[in-house]
Structures are given as structure tokens and as C-alpha cells.
Length: 402
View (cartoon, rainbow, N blue to C red):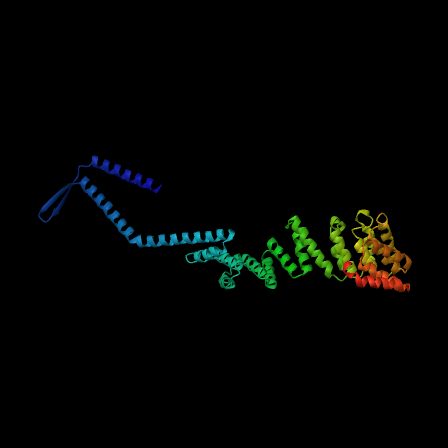
């Protein structure tokens, strides 16, 4: 556009001069000492214009010659900056290719000519992560010191997350938690921070905190289904294994959905927790609810036996006996149910009936529990021959018992 305007102006001046020359016949006389020089006015104007043009372009040439060193310097700086950006690009590419040493080296080389602080920050972050993956503590500490200079708010979230991940990889879980909590102070809805905290708390077996993270992630639909199931089973299992109060136990159990409550996995975890807190009444109620479905009665046979060994309340023993007898119908050759009925009858001092069930269980499948309880029956009935036989079996065949 500027060139067009300049051309237009020159063309207009040329037309003006040409028009002036057509209608001008003036003469200019110049006296120098005794000499007289006469020129046409048109020629003088032309010479004056030529001289102005020559002087103007001469100055332009001189100015450009003077600027050459600066232009060369700027070109060198520009080329160095392009090279630095290429190094940074290579560092990022090599990081994702798994070439961590090359990533580290290119990231540091890019810093020599890089002027943009955002790019410097990115280079240090790549170098720090690569050093951590290479398990080079010296390099990692060096870059960590350099990262301290980046104190502006816009860089803090990324810094905390990267440092937290590195602490996590070094199994320094306390420091990782500090940085992850700092990240959440900056962004409460940050999904990766919640995910990492979940993993950290699981490593620390802090299941109550892990449950908080899991609950948040599930609420925000931030876990894939198979991972959600895996984490939930682990967290609930951990919680149920450490809770000492039925009320607290039910708080978490009641948060499970209908399908989870009916699954054997969570059912078994809940039942074992009830046994551990010695809430046998609740354990019996749990079995009564689940034994309504005959297809899963055998699944809970071991749970029934575990409870039978612990209960001493007459009413609870009667309820357990009914459950066992219902499951026994159609499963008369099940050694586990026979053993359970033997234990329950022994607890209720139905010693002859207990002996019958225990001996039947031993015939089908020898077991340490059946032999021990049969010896209890023998002792209670003063059957010395049976007691001696049980002791002999225990001593000579213990390797065959489960």
C-alpha cells in the first residue's frame, strides 16, 4: 500500500513538472565572477529534483550500512531462539518416546538461549520429571532448586502436582500429601490430584481418607468402571477390617448399592467384620437374609461354621441350627454342613447328635476341626476309647487335615 502511494505521488509530481515545463519559457542567469551562466528554469528545477533524490538515497544507504551489525546480531539471537525452541520440542517428544536422558539433556540445552520464562518453566518441569524417572537424585535435586524461582501463581498447580508425583514415586507419601493438598487448595475439583491422593492413602492404609477420595471420584464420574470396582473393594475391605464398632460398620455398608450388598464379595467382608466386632446377633440376621436364596446357601457355609464356633447364646444357636438344617436338605453329603451341625449340636449339648454329624463329616472328608470337636464330644461323654482314637488321629494324620 505504501509503495502504491509513493508511486502515485511521484507520478503526480512528474505530471506537474511536465505541465509546468510546457508552459514555462523562463531563463535563470547565474553570475560567477566575470562569468555568466544562463539556464532554462525547467532544467534548473530538474537538476534540483535530481540532487534531492541523490542526497536522500545516499543518506539511506549510509544509515543501512550502519545498521548492518545490529541486524546481524538480531539474526543470531533469532536463530538461537529458534534452536532453543527446537530443543524444547525435542525434549517433549523424547519424554513421550521414553528417551528420558535425551529429554533431560535437550531441556537443559534449550535454557541457554531461551528468554521466555514460561518456556523455561516447561523445560525445567520436563528435566525434573525425566530425572525422577531415571532415579537420578542428584539431577532431580538440582532442578528442584531451579524450580523454586518460579513463584508466580500461574505455575504453582503444575509444580505441586509434579513434585507430588515424584515424592509418590520415591514412596515419600507424607510429602506427596502436602503437595497434593496444596494443589487442591488451588483447584478443589482437580481430578488427577484426587486420584493420586486415593493411591497415596491406600499405600498408607488410611482407608477412611481413601474412602473420602473414592467417594468424590465416584460422585464426579472420574473413574473407569473396572478401576472403580477394584478401588472400592480394596477400600471397603480395608475399612471393614479396622472398624471396631457396628454402628460405624453399618454406616459404610448402607452406602453400598443393592447389587453390591447382594454380592458375595461385600457380603463376606461385612460378615467377617461383624464376627470381628463380636456382633453375633447382627451376623445371624445377615445370614438369615442371605439364606433365603437357596442358590447361595452353600457359598456362605464357611461363614455359618465360623459363626457356630463363636456363638454361645441359646436363641442364636437355635436360629443358626435352623439355617444349617435348611441348607443341609438336599446337601446331605456336604462335609462342611455336617461339621457345622456337629459344632452347633455340641454347643447345645446334643452330644450324640453332634457325634453322628462329626463322624459323618470325617468319613467324607477328614478335617482338623471335625477331629477336634469329636474329641470334645468324647471328653464330655467320658468315652475314653473315642477320645484316644481322636487323639491318635490328630497326632498321626495331622498333615492330611485342612
